[in-house]
Image 1 (spheres, rainbow, N blue to C red):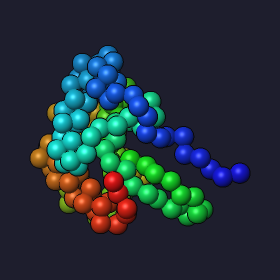
Image 2: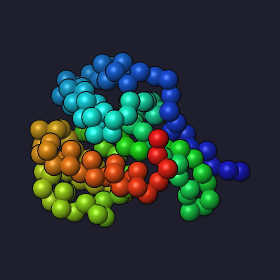
Image 3: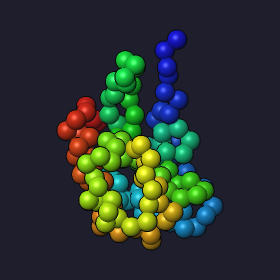
Image 4: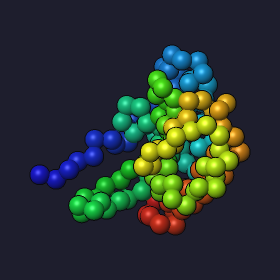
Length: 141
């Protein structure tokens, strides 16, 4: 049986989703990231699944030959902090990360507690470069 990615674009309004966040810092940071990512990508915000605010999409082919679409970049305001999706990974971005401020990374997620913990200018540079790399290496829309 073929794998079906459960995280897909939905018709849910990202602004409504952000208004529903109870934590005032997380809500404010969510709206700030919404504005930043719209500016960086030039793409509208789309909800992916229940909690991901995504911008753009790209076609992928997995190692197991599964094809699909996923958000090019985006974020999710979680209870413990913000997850920012850098789908190109972090191998090429060590200089940005060294200047960013307090954060952790996963395979393709940048985790920060709040935007006040990082240098927003560096975040914009990182995200701009990561999006340019995605568009250069994948079929994005």
